[in-house]
Image (cartoon, rainbow, N blue to C red; front, top):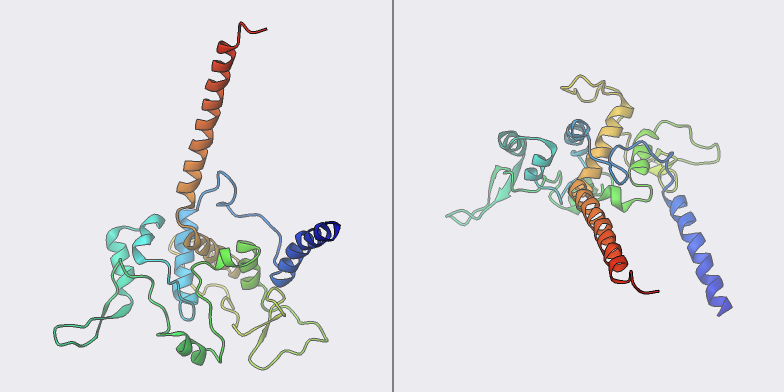
Length: 252
């Protein structure tokens, strides 16, 4: 029994440490949507969508998000149709039994940059760019890890580290070497319509918030329901306590 308890204790303390070693990241905090009462910043989400479209979408898919979901970011129906129509998808067959290309519709998921995983590997030197739909949930550290990864390029590798051909040094990626080149290599890669300065740090922060929304688009609704349930339970507890006092007031 003692041996089992000892093994369980070792796992409890070792697993978090192993996870941190696998996905190191910068300091915690600083995200408006975190916490019980946190909510998404719609301006940051729209800026993050722009960064994704103009920087990330060339390699990374967003298969679990449909264009119509962008209504949650404040886009109108016409704006969503325009955004979707920028991409083309293969559809069919038509009356002649042939497949054809058409503009994407709001009901379509975000169009992937490659037809399949093999095509993605060929275009990226053998590396497969991950789908970003759930990347915030899939990585230890979540937002902090992805932000640290995006802004961690450019640091000097340790003297004893040999960088392999085609790899880039990033201290936040497991092993310190990543096939992806710096996606945010310079400021002003995008132009924000709201006047926000598009520094590397700002673009990273915005796209991370967009990816956090993509991974959990109904977070705000879930939190609102949770708060209402807690308030209901508090009121119900008070009612039950008052009823108990009333029923047992004459019992000594």
